Amino acid sequence: MGFVYFRNGIMFLKQKNFIIIILLLFVSMRSFSQEGPSVMNLPKFDRAPRHFGFYVAVNQMFFVVEPADKFQQKVWNRDQIPDLVADSARVIGIESSPVPGFSIGLVSNLRLGEYFDLRFLPGLQFGERDLHYSIMQFSHADSSIVNISKNINSTFIDFPLYIKYKSKRLNNFRAFVTAGASYKIDLASSTKDKAENPSTVVVKLKKHDFTGDIGVGFDFYTVYFKFSTEIKMMYGINDMIFREGNLYTDSIKKLSAKMFQISFTFE
View (cartoon, rainbow, N blue to C red):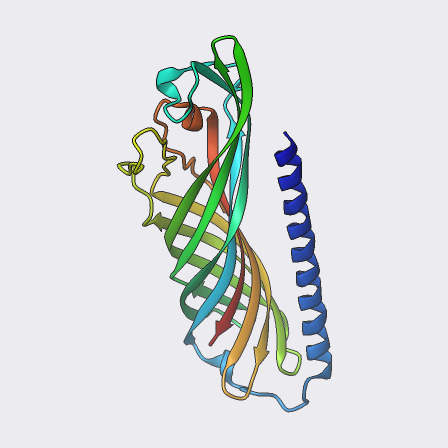
């Protein structure tokens, strides 16, 4: 189990550094708003009924793993563990870890009022996640623990619809929050995928998902365009795992998606 503690330590450091970066971002933006020029750039920008743009973003995709009931007690036979050289096995732990990815997309904004907008941001999201299994395997009278990781790639077509609430503009700065929902199609998902090695199990995902999204960010008005940064969390609703009667898929009761994203928007 040593590698599990090591991996958890690395994940803790990554999350801690991520929080520090976010805090520095907030501090720098606040300083910018206080020290910005008194001349207002693009004074009529927010009065337009609609405008368009694009965004680029970095993301981290996660899995929220809900193990099956009494999964640690279930013994899997040889036919259900094709990539293990053992007579039988038990899963004793399941974890997920993210891998950095990126997103790109378009922005369309409809003005609803002085402080509210309706936004549609279709885009592509590229990322991957790892599922880590701790397995107790049995061969004759011997037993041992092995750790196996399954890498899962995803390429989502994303169709989000958001309501944006904006604060009162301060010089060339404005804060905002967004909330809404998104429909996602995973182009990399296929229940017919097979591994190059027949003895290797591929963990497959379902193709469609819905997420509830919430974000917070800042608008900066430059001379020629509006630049925005936003931190967003997306919480998947559907159970995404495709079960195939083996210990990797059937040891999980529900596998839902979660994504953290920092985006940079140009409008």
